[in-house]
Image (tube, rainbow, N blue to C red; front, top):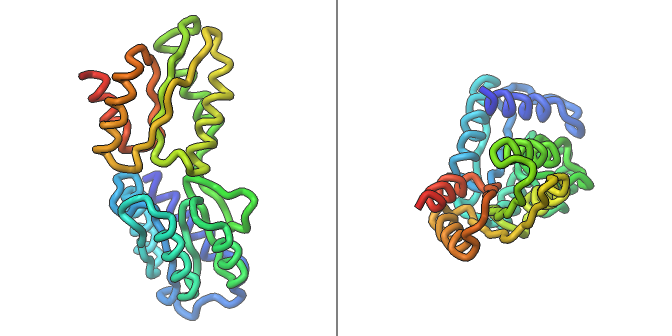
Length: 233
């Protein structure tokens, strides 16, 4: 239901956007593009289910297009095609080339970023998490289990450490976890590359090298299960 509501909101925002002064003669003529970063990934497929539901509800044509592995160049190509096709709106993750966001606006195409943002860009809107609040909730949960006096030895796994979303989340962990009375140490950051096999291999390496880790944080959806399995082993 949450995914459906998010996608419905995206469609509503796009349908009433700036730049296109004349509405389509027929709602069925409207075309929306979701340029997904990972077309077969479990988390993003939940977003697809919401998109499909919203598009069926409004009787509009929608496309779900993107690479099946992390490839921002492929995402950029999908966005460029959507702009050339004069899509009524585009939804994508904020890892694309910012110049495409400007280009979309100049062509009267609103572009919504989800999951990760480019706040200084010309994007129409952003829908995503509050990374500071996320870190605060994590620390609260960790202290519930380990108390406030034990030193926290932390390892983090992200999909791609070069992405701004990963950097922002890690920076908030560093900032918020400084408040922990027992102190903390960030001993390792690894990349899953959105691949579950690599995720497990990386966690095996990390836990072998740092067996005294007491907090493992996964910012990549495919990483949590391999992490738990490896820790148990």
